[in-house]
Image (cartoon, rainbow, N blue to C red; front, side, top):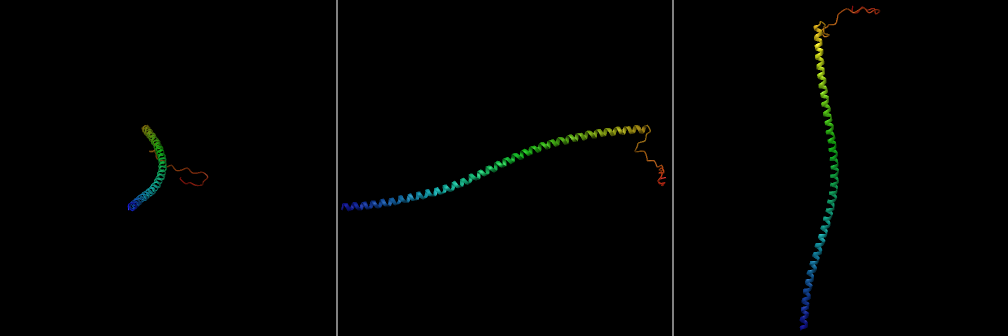
Length: 149
């Protein structure tokens, strides 16, 4: 009887051990599944990370190209400003020369006017005051025409 009680208790404990083993196997399978899920998610994240790194590299290249283009534009702008300043100075110089010539011209006109007045005072007629003479034209010899007599 004691042997059969032991056998029954061994059977009960082996059934308990089997149930415990089944639970442990289920937990292990669940842990393996979770690990597989995490590995898959990790792989997807690594792929995304790789894509982001590639995109970042492309953006950095584009940024470098844009910086180079900006440097060229800034250099061109600086050169254009220098040229504009040189042209501005040249225009101012030309304006000053024109103003000086205008002053000289005005001085010459004043001197000319003064001389005309002196000549008029001395009895010489102004070329503007003189009228063309209306004397008959001389006969052109050999032409046989008396036009203008």
